Length: 311
Image 1 (cartoon, rainbow, N blue to C red):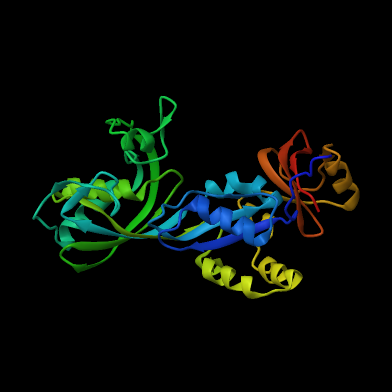
Image 2 (image 1 turned 60 degrees about the horizontal axis):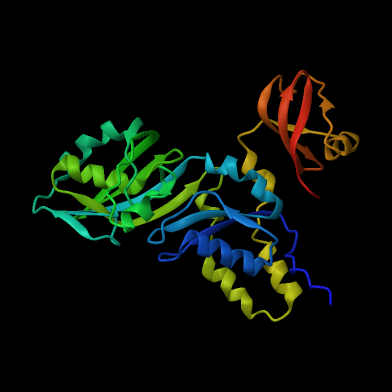
């Protein structure tokens, strides 16, 4: 008897800009979205801690080819630091490792912020996905191994002290680049101010190029499960998807003809003409009839496809 093959998902393609709820893991969110959309594949652009809420861009189908470009985008977070305790995870989840009765005032907090703006050296939290000798730091930390993680450069574009609702808390907004750990900022603020600190609330409001207004709450998607008609339910879900090309606004764009598109689909380069054509770049995107066709390089007067999209 022939074995029945694994049922494949729908070959849809697009980005869902999910508003991830608090206490819900990023991997769990991707699995839920993939199941809801009956998608053949899915991936996310940048992990968001389970105790954090906010923007988690999820790529479905062919849009997963654009994930690296979104992961490199700027991010905006609003976070609350609770003063007086250092925790081993640098957030509410961890065990208390040090305490202080001191509390910083607004002037003291604002005085340290310039040192955390620009390109800075940051040591990631012990409980992080950073690999040490092939092992994840959080696995080693959970096993009780003292983890020494080397500092690395991250870029902080701006930090604003939004307010101090009470002596025990301060609220910040930060715009930063790839690889920045907000938990590490809270830890380092507390150490420098001599009072310790950890994250008590964290929300991501932007992952460029997606804006906060594009976010879709997970509860809104789950509510559509009540629609019994599969076609209607999936059509309602698909209406939330952002076309893959919207993720590539940072790249030079080339609009091509149908004849050129045929060559690109076959994996062949095309000759670029016109004064507006890019001269040379490692990454450019080709569009046909307004839809994303391929990502490739421009060299020697040609567009050379590297990743071709279906459709």
